[in-house]
Length: 128
Image (tube, rainbow, N blue to C red; front, top):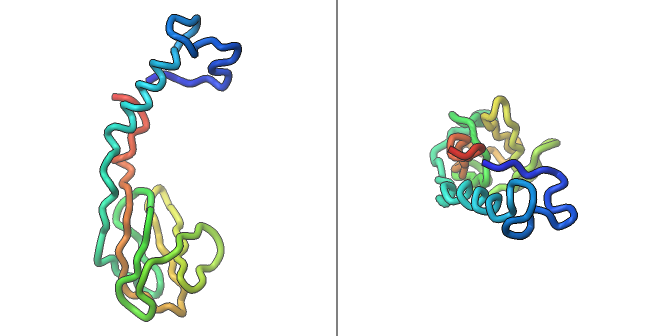
């Protein structure tokens, strides 16, 4: 995988074929395309996540994209927040060592949810 320096392309270098310097723009764009080509699947929904006393810790590390309350007082999609106390229609997502913990508003009495999550194992960080 090529490394894109902070001064990439300054003075026009690396932007045209056979320009001086490395990597070329074409090489870098091919590497980026290769990295994204393995991540074309939509993250799966995990259903039946049990929420106890308005909190649920997911079983594995990964990035949470969406949360939908499926049982309890206020079912439906929830807005993801990262700080503060969750209000009506919200869920706070905290990460400990990459593992998400969901905290729902106490008044909503959520007891189960579905979560759309991209596992860390699916995120390519280096070119193989």
